[in-house]
Image: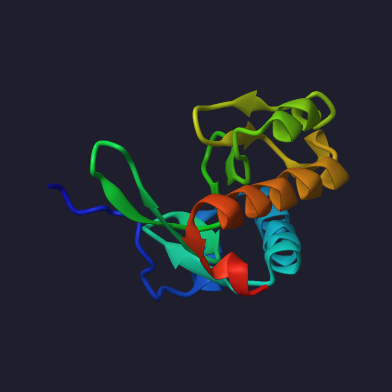
Length: 145
């Protein structure tokens, strides 16, 4: 089975943002997201794979037998848009999306161009709902909070 690329790397988060992000607004938004996601998760920001900033961790296992570890919350400041890993497929989360603001939905993440495009209070509710879901369904660092 292929080795998962998205594991904690020990790289410095601040150095990553300063070297990877070339847009000043995206840098400022990245530092804001770090502050918010740390506050909401109670976890420090850590690099998870080459470009994901993760907060906490959990272990997953699919019916296919594939398993691995992932951050409880996370984001990546990609060139086109932020990839926000703060969503769990629950009824409450689906309802919250209606009030989030301007975004696109991927299979497992929410894409936003800039933080001012979305409602931060709704982002917090989505994040907390995701932490709740993960803590109920997986072994995770969020259970000790």
